[in-house]
Amino acid sequence: MDRDNPTGSGDWETISCLKRRYPKRMCPNPIAIEVATVDGISLADAGNVFYKNDHITGLICKNADQKTCFCRDYKVRFVCHPSFCGRMRDEILFKDDRPLSIGDLRV
Figure 1 (cartoon, rainbow, N blue to C red):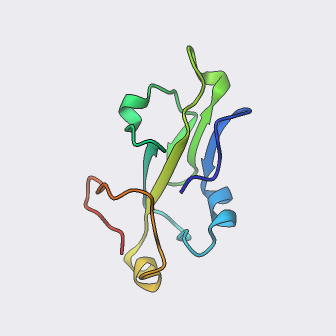
Figure 2 (cartoon, rainbow, N blue to C red; figure 1 turned 60 degrees about the vertical axis):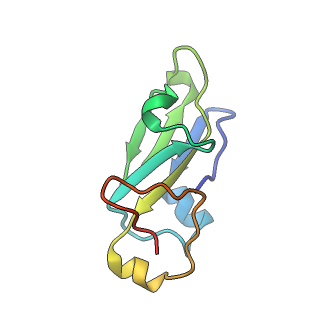
């Protein structure tokens, strides 16, 4: 999911904003997060400093925290409890098909 662009203060892919934007696609209590740039660069290779990057808040990259550049444009996806995924079968579409470290949990 990609809700924000890094213009202005940075890139804010927070869970609260994503739940408002994608109410049927966001589970109520994610258990993990995966982040990459919208053009597929991994978080480790992106070179940004993050204010927040967790399954409770989501991703916050502040332009003011960057030493040499602005935040890149990020997309996030979440691991949800199986009960949510079963209920959402065939409704969830993501931009990316790379599996998480614990497996590809999309349905």
